[in-house]
Image 1 (spheres, rainbow, N blue to C red):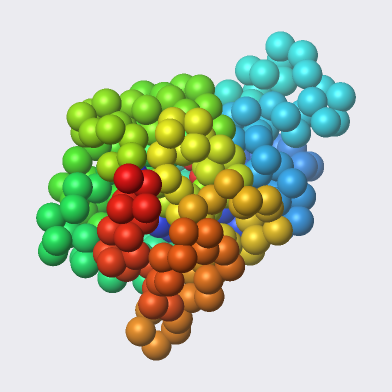
Image 2: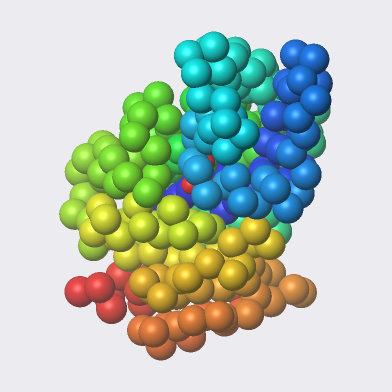
Length: 244
Ligand code: XBP
Ligand code: MG
């Protein structure tokens, strides 16, 4: 069960953050989210909730600002869709290889994301092909955002699988907490925004998906799965066995 933002795609720093800032600029606001501030704001999942949390930090939490946050997020979504169409959002290195290997082995793939359906589906289609994923759960289907487990639970229900049979791949503590609350095993593939988070509950932590010529380092491997410098089918199978 795959996460999108920060996991399948490198979408936060040079994607969503840029789209939020463009929406602020178009609306005549002075606010801009720099790379460091955006890292702090990522603690709040869901783009509209993130804008509201930012306004609240600034002491603006009235109905007018909630309405503005809704409009800003709608425009941010349009801008992000344009960026995706222009090829500005790319898969993380090694993701393409992993999906191909899983597909060849007839492993069923599903997506559980807190992102908005309007960009999630066209982006996944452009980068990987929608037909690859048996289920795609987005914020529209699971409005309680991660770390709430509802996205993972809904995807599991669609697949008709017990939790132990569908390991999650996430990049963040919010994603890990959501997967664990749904009873899933969880591999965390960290990125620059999430590297320092506490992944003690994860079943495997890697610093990338890894490729033949650019292997990933293992940061935690409590089940001794011993990944071969990349997240591969064998490692995921050993994880499923370890989960019993
Ligand atoms: C992703 C999110 C989303 C994206 C922005 O979390 O929290 O809010 O940052 O997308 P996860 P939207 O990777 O855990 O699913 O603006 O569409 O919300
Ligand atoms: Mg994520």
